[in-house]
Image: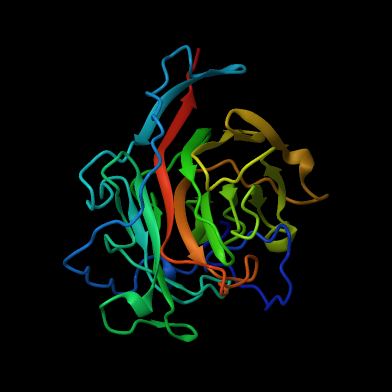
Length: 321
């Protein structure tokens, strides 16, 4: 979805088509809020469609263009229903401060909001607090309306260059904002957007057939981020799983949906005098936000719970010949 943690924007009244903002990047928002104690009983409500997950690619299948890709990190999310994501691979951002976008969710580390579905996928679930048993949770606007989850690999897996892909099935509805993206690991020392941000996939629920790929850097961030959208020929991204990927090289980043390239940026794509900041380690994020400047807010047509399914996340690097 787009941003992270140190982003500060002036209020924006109208939805902006390429506003890639998804989190306020300050040290205080990087998971230092107190977690919410998990409820004792939890049964996921989402019924996953019967789609056969392809096996990990063979060496021949990993070959893409001029690169021979080697798998270096992955999570297939296999495990019992209701179990938590692997703590050796994922951490959590916690809190309800709006994340720079005046979002309405409170991010937790509870299994109700992020757990395995028992069928080989991670389920990130947004819930209405009015239908949850715990005491009131406070957000920037008062009592929180929703809880959800935001997972990241910061501090456990960071890398420079490669192919990153995830097989995802979207939630849907006004005000719903799922994202799969990357942030520069030097964000604490240089701040956002100098750290760089690569949005592999963002979707806003009022556009069920369209996703967005974007980069943010110094002088081209927020509404001025450089990106492009991709629209399905038919159907919606909520109807089935799709594979979203980027190939990140020293002077090029390419975006793909189901193996089809739809966008590329290079240093020449930047505004005159702007800096290419994609030459250092990044970490991964996957989250489901509710509300914000770009997607707008849930209305009477939005239903809950909303589920964002992640069948796998895989990272490859080009083999050195």
